[in-house]
Length: 230
View 1 (tube, helix red, strand yellow):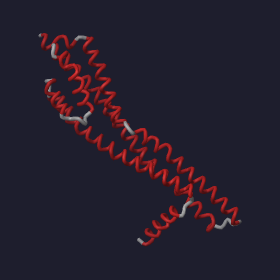
View 2 (spheres, rainbow, N blue to C red; view 1 turned 60 degrees about the vertical axis):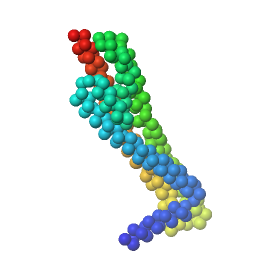
View 3 (tube, rainbow, N blue to C red; view 1 turned 90 degrees about the vertical axis):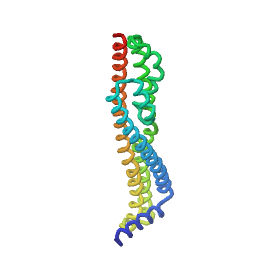
View 4 (cartoon, rainbow, N blue to C red; view 1 turned 90 degrees about the horizontal axis):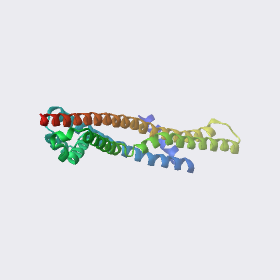
């Protein structure tokens, strides 16, 4: 226990006693870390709500055959991209769809299909917001930390030259100070990269759900038009 406390104290002393360049690098990495974790937590909540509400919407989509009932269900699920696309597209084309056999014409279905694609891209863009900052943190921060390390090692060699000694007591503090920035850079980059890959995979999953919903919606419209024609 005492060894852990001493190690923590020594680590903090290295940060406090580090040079100006190292402190600037560490401050830069701290800012990136705060921004990255804020984005991670905010996106995590958004995706969690979307997954929960999308599951509820697709359950209703399988159970309900009436498009009007699905519209009411979708309007109650604002965080589901599939529900949002369904609600916006159906609201726009409700009058056209209600005309019966005219709703399943090729021109009408093509128009609805294009609107489904447009609304789907809008929803996916909403979920991809700020993910580029995570990618930036994951790619840039290790090199920022490396810059601090190289600068610290260079300072250590200059210190050796000034003191004319290669004793470990002279070299070790500068090397340890230099390596702190590399550790800090990796500590920022690794969570950002993991989170970025996870959110991108979830966005692709949402995209597949939107395609599934669009296909089902168009099929329902065609079946409804055929039933009313009969």
